Length: 135
Image (cartoon, rainbow, N blue to C red; front, side, top):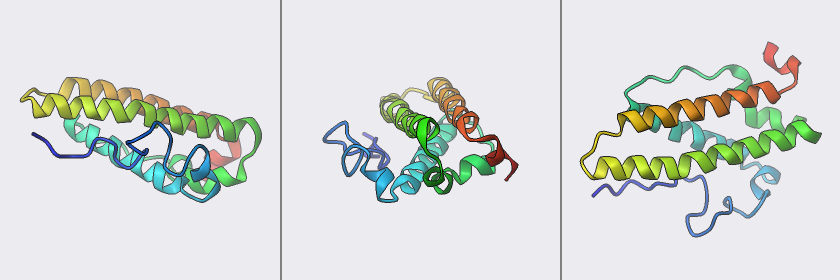
């Protein structure tokens, strides 16, 4: 049996709320840790899929630094997008670990999860203001 935790620090496993309660991590600077945890989770999925993930563009790599400077619909959409990414990754990784723990090969479903993650993550870049993409 695989003892690897399946939540990758993305949420409190006892509830469906992010650590610290709804919205708390955006207000107290936890966005960087959450974003880093998502990237670590994605890297684990890439390994299970047998692929090497591409480096993040600077606008996405530095998203937690850019987020406090945003307001209005863009900020809300990006915050929701990060929540959605966590909602995709948590059960997806749990399923991949269950397949692997049962002796199966998780490569094909891991690749599907990777592609879904990558597409959702890249959509966040579209939500950033155009001037953000120059950096």
